[in-house]
Length: 196
Image 1 (tube, rainbow, N blue to C red):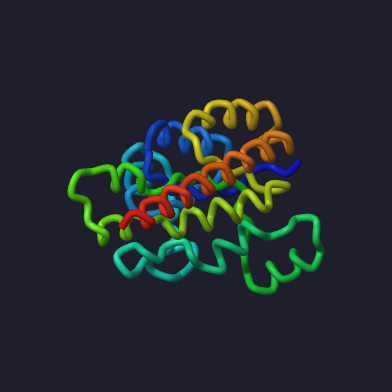
Image 2: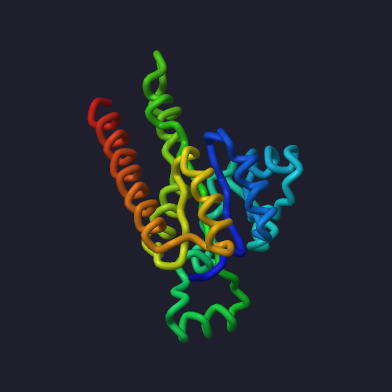
């Protein structure tokens, strides 16, 4: 069981995120973040590294491209049990990301508003969030993925009990929540677009 050393936190729903990040930082976890989440964490006194600083590539296209970068996705998808993965990571100067806390743009709330336009609906389809979540869930053997703020306290409690790590069964349970969420999210988009 490996200790969590680096977390990527990028959330639309900021419920409890400052306290969660503060606890992570207190456990020695480096925090990567983006945009409004990074600002909220900084205001809460949490040390943060912007993802753009981590990747060496700026956020662009009005925030459409923030985390869609090989440095981020390699860090998440890197198989810690494969020597060739470790060699490739080292060769390219890449570093692992051990925890991903992401929730998605509120697509359903957007399309429920009276008079919402197709353009507004399309702009509220999250691209980077599902990609991060699915990558982290796929690599649940090494990566803790969090989509629900209600899980923050139990994750911190477990990390304190497990010397900064989470248990495999916990990571698997959290990964299953990811696929349920992304399935429902894609379903909501499909349903909306079918009615346009």
